[in-house]
Image 1 (tube, one colour):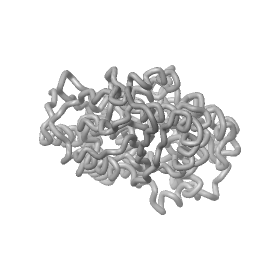
Image 2 (spheres, helix red, strand yellow; image 1 turned 135 degrees about the vertical axis):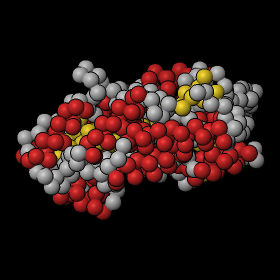
Image 3 (cartoon, one colour; image 1 turned 30 degrees about the horizontal axis):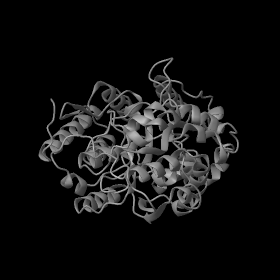
Image 4 (cartoon, helix red, strand yellow; image 1 turned 180 degrees about the vertical axis):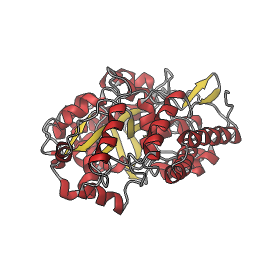
Length: 438
């Protein structure tokens, strides 16, 4: 969705704040089991319109439960994570926080998030396995309830594919052949671009291929950024850039917008929030695009990566963890709450049941030509591959931008850039005091 598009980073200030603690379970949420009487909770979030959504709770279930939630609007991404860690160090973190999935390991490793598996564990069935897994970090603990997601898909100019006699690629091999075929028919036109200015895109593509960049072995972190799956992705895109089959210009620039709007670039590998971006970037092409699943690495495969998304977590500083967990579950599983989140906050819900109801019964206005847009999106979301995040995503992402940005510009080896990502990420973990398995 629009507000999750580029919020993928954890700041260097967060990395400095990390201790040497490996991934560990956080405090029990039984602290307030004996709590009686009114409870007041504070919720830090960046989502627009969240106060209106929370009003539904305060006037309904919250009133009955005597649990009142107050929204405190915050900046997003790295700024919010840094602020949470600073507040937690002083023992003054809010009861609830909105946290992007890739930020969860940083918060958990700093003992800032509570294990709420005892309170929300039964909500698992409401989410795709690959989505729910992001809040468990591969353990039996549950550190948050999924809120919104960004399943990846393939967007293409339906009219221009027809004009140039192109078929929607079902595999990445077909994608490469489509790019080459287009170049032969229209040398000044590109199928798409490889962009190094948003690390989340590459991370999602690696996720689809089966990559797990961070995992744990006992009390040690293992970094696999240059694993076989990611090498395959890097080589694929690097080869296309080297041969000139696709462009190598960054996304979100005036030049990129113009290429989309004029038909110089006729496809985009993106996520479910793409209609909002295309509305601004390519207004003259409304109704000319279509969406399809991502190409697969092999015939018969059916999975996608994720680009963006966030969750609702309960902090270890909260004196009312049970009450906070109850609200977090309601916010992300209740039908009325999810409808309000879609309307007021513009999110694409993580809850599978909400993906075909309310605001998602009709296609985005930009895609009025594709009535089944959200039905297809829901089917794709169910195939989200598991991800594996670590406590220094910021370092990996920053190194990606630098190393892959240079490689794309120079048309040099993408796998060498991948090795640089691996080396810098491992070095940073060791510098911060984490034990790293080789």
